[in-house]
Length: 284
Image 1 (tube, rainbow, N blue to C red):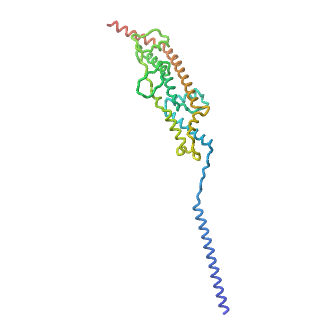
Image 2: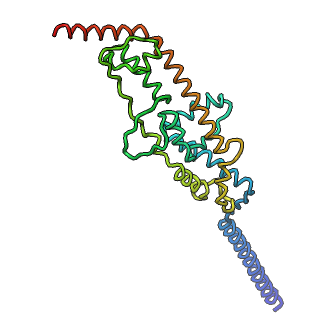
């Protein structure tokens, strides 16, 4: 009887231990499973730090600089002048943005110095270039070259070409070449529209990604950009006018030198032309 009790106790003890081990193993597996799930569902959240007001303003200004350069490149007549200004006016030491592209004065500045005309726009009217303009000096130069090379008849020589060359002899039946019309390429620019388009782009967080983390910008920031020293819009136009004055002076001087170099050829062309006219008259 004692042996039976001892065996029964041993059996019960083994069952308790097995039950405890099972609970421990089950708990351990459960804990590992929970840790695995926690690891699998963990995500990383990136927090964008807010930028300061000054940083955001500078981002906008930089964007306006970039968009303005892109805009100028779309207009060949102004882009060519701007490129020349970088060396002629700024000596390659700096590259200020051509803010004058947003000025209502830009078209009059261009047409005044290039063609001697103001108030021009795309209206279909025919307008001739005037004296004392860049285009006129280039026209004199071309006329002298064409007469000297006999590309055009000597009687089409311009009186001013003869004056510059110091030639007193004139062709018979003189019919001076007609001055060309103004080119209207420069009138396609619309300053206010260009400015508003670039301003809207640079203020739009969706387009100007650098503004991420900035508060909404004030509209007057664009006008502030125009007046940032030392390169204000007004200063940009003053520099452009200085450039145009110099360019007109250079065109005048270059034309005078060029025409003087063709003096003998022009005289010979006139003499040959006059001789042919006289000969034809004697035949009749």
